[in-house]
Image (cartoon, rainbow, N blue to C red; front, top):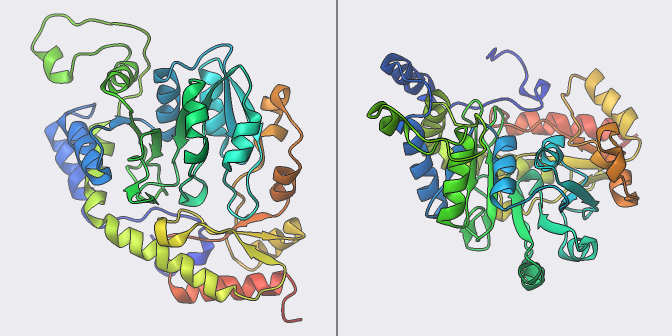
Length: 374
């Protein structure tokens, strides 16, 4: 990375703690690059970090959602209640199961779903709810949990942004839901590429492990010691490479540093933007969250976006609403709040290489771009 490049010129970028290259080199030297004991060690250590009995590693956050939905029995004829304001991967995972998305609104101040909106969207075809933990913020659906349980509706968390965040006293993933993490390049913890599912039961864990390896249930060591193996059902090539797992293992010891730095940077933005007219900071509940994004809402977003880019600030948009996408047109519903948010949201540069000076520069530029101080 070129240290002379101002950090605000990158909206997001990976952060390495220093041991990742050595960890990958060890795997390369061992000559086994597929799912190995390195992958299984990563699973055990993530489970211990989260305080859960098991965790199943897969190739990506999308693969995590796909296999979690399948493990929950989601398929053709089923509906999944999901916010429109999410990355399209969430919706594609639902469609990959043969199910249909039922899009709902999010709260403007958090960009997360609320229990009332979930409850109102349930139909006789609903079999799952996929709350998206936007920006890393946990979502509490305990108020409607009895209703969901009574109707056999699974909660499958899209926690791609939320590794390390807390939901009450437990980390996200430790609250009894099927939870899906992403360890992509710019996530709070990266494997280069990877994902993880926290299952609810040993049976779900076994199903996901079968699904991720083309229906084969025997481990690599078991297959090497035998002349045959069994394919016990439908499966996909979703196993996590030991190369990627090694990166994740090297990242875990530094995660507390990542947690503190991300919270400090988000608070610096909050301070720097305090009182800025026409700029609304989307709340992430920073005291309980490891923030993944810093998002603001602004009027004339297209104008502000262009002004920020012209000033060398790498702003982005997370995300264009999915119910307006051509690929998902048949499930479109009227979602005026989401549509308004889709015209206002702007993601500011946010990653661990940034300094408070970078944040003050971004905030000052944003204030000028929105007409503050003229």
